Image (tube, rainbow, N blue to C red; front, side, top):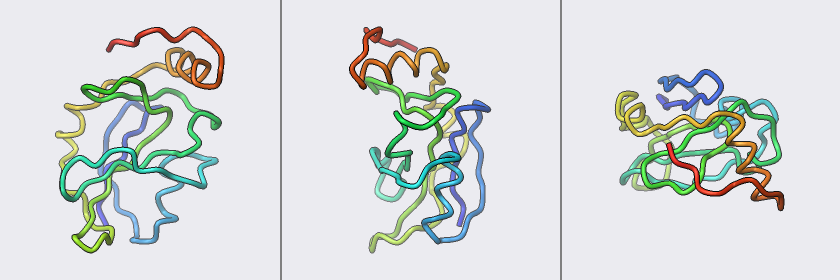
Length: 127
């Protein structure tokens, strides 16, 4: 199955092939990932998967998209789905996603994490 990976360490968006086994998503999201969340559905068929515990895992940076209030820490994977909810090839193109992604450096991601976890330092982030 074709999926799109948003790699925040390399600051690149790329298409890769994986099996339909959901466990193949974890290594694309990060080294210590064992749980994911799906915070964004882009259209009727494409959904963003992210590390559900991204605030607690190591990361090299993150990303935002237009109209987002805060960054996603670490990587993302965009996967397509059928009307029945089965995973399938992504419908968006790499170019579509590249136009939407705004990279956030590690320092700003750390400020966001500290803010969420009870620290301070996060005011308003603009890309």
